[in-house]
Structures are given as C-alpha cells and as structure tokens.
Length: 371
Ligand code: GLA
Image (cartoon, rainbow, N blue to C red; front, side, top):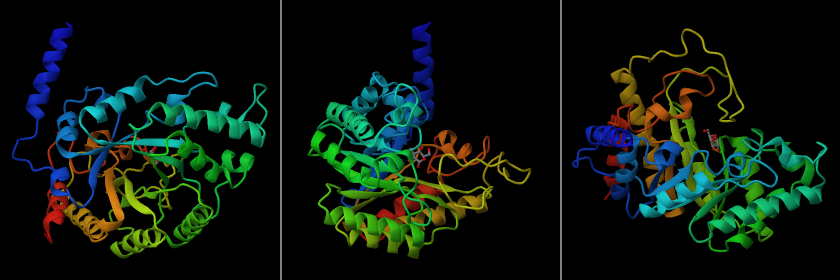
C-alpha cells in the first residue's frame, strides 16, 4: 500500500515536473537578490507533487508559512514541538537555500496562555519578558547558524503608524521590541534580524515605522533589516510608493526585503487594504468571479503588475537581499480564504497545475531587462 502510494506520488510528480526548458527565477536573479517562497507543511515534507518540483527548481530562499509560529512551536508553557520546524530547516539545508524563521513575537497565532499566569490573570511585565526570553532563546538557539534570518517582531504598528495595543505592548511597554531583538541577537549573533509588517507603503504607517526604526537604530538595537510583506492589490500601492518605501528604510542603513509578496486579483470585500489576518468579510455573488479560470485580459494585467513591482525591486537591488512570495502555486495561497473564505484567487506566479503563468515570464524578463 505504502509502495503504491509512493508510486502514485512519483507519477504525479513526473507528470507535473517543470520541463527542463523552464528557466529559473533564482538563476535569472543571481547577482540581484534571492527569490523565495513560503512553504506549507506538505511542501517541506515532500507531499505536494505539484509545488515540490517548482520549489526546488525556482527558489533559493524559503519561509515557513506556519511551522515556526508560536502556536506551532510552543503550544503549551512547558511544551515545545520542533517536529515540523526541524523538517522545514532540513529541507532548506538539503536544497542549500537561505532559511527564514517566521516569526518570534506577534499578537496573532500566539496562544492566550502566553500572556497569562496559571490562574488566567495577565502576566506582569517581568514574567512576560521572561517568557519571551525563554521562547526566543530556545527557538533561535536550536537553529543557530542554520536559520539565517528571523522575523523577530511582526506587525507591531497600527495603520496610522502608532503602536498597536497588542498584549506585548500593553504588558511590557514599547521596549518589548528592543528586548526581543536583543534576546534574538544573544541567541544567535550571526543571524539577520528583521522587523516585518504590511502596508508600510502607506504614508502614515510608513512614517511611524521609519520613526520606530530610526529610534531602534539610534539606541543600538541589533536590527539588520525590514520586511515589507507585500500583500498587494492589482492596483495599489503604485510603483512610486513602492520605490519611496524601499528608499526610506534603506536610508536608515537597513536591508530591505520583500517578505510575503502576492497580488490579490479579486474584488475587494473590505474597505481597508489591511493584511491583518483577523479580518474577515462575507462574500457576495460578485466577489468570486473567476471560479472557472482567470480571463486572459486579467492574466495580462497581473503580469503587468508583477513586472511593475519587480522593475522597482531591480532598480533597488543594492538595498535588497530577497523577494519572497507568500506561496508557490495559486491553489494553496491563503488569499483563497482571506479576507473572505472559499474564493478562487490567482495571486502567484504558478497556476493550480503548477504551470508558469504570464506573470512568471514577466518577472523573468525584468531580471534581464538592463543586463
Ligand atoms: C501575515 C503573517 C504571515 C501570514 C500571512 C497570511 O502576513 O506575517 O505569517 O499569516 O499574514 O498567511
């Protein structure tokens, strides 16, 4: 039975494997920056015959979609579970990829007990700092020298650029960020350490983030870079905003990475452009228009949008180390379920069968345009 299953997986992999003639993004972008994808568990465990060959052929950096989030890696106060994370890291090492850790300190996908004592009362500042320290020391320490960069703090800002009133902020205070970076640096002085957030292209949020980064740098906090998540729409932010954002952070001496790129092609079901994972919205008859495939004209619009973005990235390659897509193929993208569940979205470079889309070839072209 096992053998049969292995054969079926193998046959599917062969059927879906990229023709050797498909050029690779990682080769095309050599000398500019790395190209990456976020992986789900099936992918780094070798159980996705469609995405598997694409990941190996196309990307030279990986991020874990969920495997290293707090709820996955430390589900209980005394319980660490490294099973998936170990496999994820082993996958990256096997394929000689730059391996990302994502993420250490976030308000989402972090269990409620983290912020409470055994009686369910809010922790004191000191107790929460101890807990944060234990988590970071244990997780970063385990992969010291193997995970090359960490998203240390994720999404600490509101849309208007003020500090988000997360339990981390409320209990510890504004210095929770500096503390997290210091703990991560102590656990692996060789690792790159990033602040990661969405919508930093928007004026107000960018201004808040630039101020925050400036303060951290001035205080000598060991932060090496910023992750612009890049959960963008087909029409915003525009190329000018993208360029100005990269330049604003690079001017502070930070490396700038695009950490979670995808392009939402579906009609908006919320008023804001927020990528806050807690956002949900009901669908309407009009909000899921492409269940039978993306029309050619939309396909071309997506390709154009990707070309526009990568043109900006190539222009700023001196400040950048990587562009990571949030997924490998359209079929497994979170945008099929965010902010509205059960839609058919087309945000990435490979379709549901694993075939490269016009957007893929557009991205490829941008690598060679001026070389
Ligand atoms: C945020 C997080 C990611 C992921 C995406 C959606 O951007 O940083 O870990 O949860 O949302 O999948």
